[in-house]
Length: 266
Image (cartoon, rainbow, N blue to C red; front, top):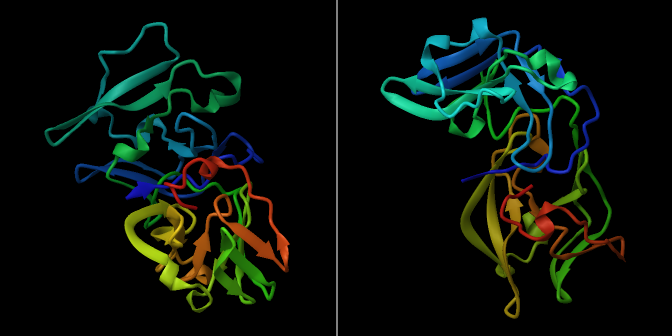
């Protein structure tokens, strides 16, 4: 399972730090180690794993489970903590800014946890995956009658007048197609899967035209999250690796993180 960063390359359209109106909890080793109705949302994007996350005030964190990390530098503006729960210890699993830069001043002395190493994160009663959902990131799925034709080396893989177009803030338009309009004989199911905080868990197919293979280039959300039901069981292709004709005109292949590797879905 790959936890997919669907937010790569997005623009920061709102405040970098803002109070979240949602009830946020973090679970590790069977315990809720952070439980807050006053969490701060840190909206960040970019390389080095920068993704939206939550910071918690001290009173909403089980502070007795945190021990200052031995590796802490006295000159660093960030202080790290080891997390010890029920005999399990994670090194550098939490941190806080002691002297944050001006744009992050509200995060001072709040705690943040290593997202991927926690067992689960919750907004209200719903588990969330990969990273905090950005309230300024919008997804619209629109039914269309546009003619979408997908080819690879002039071989037609899909042809439809019934696409669903998915528009996501800061990312290329994706075309979700009915399986009946896709040549499934050219697709090979794989064991690969990924998670998106805005869509759910995706399964994948590779394309095999006989003279060319593209691994994990097609995906589908069999059970999308309730907020994104229109893409259920539709197939989508990486614009970056196939030729997509819209109403007879060839689309330019977008340059994204998936132009080099398509191992994380969308």
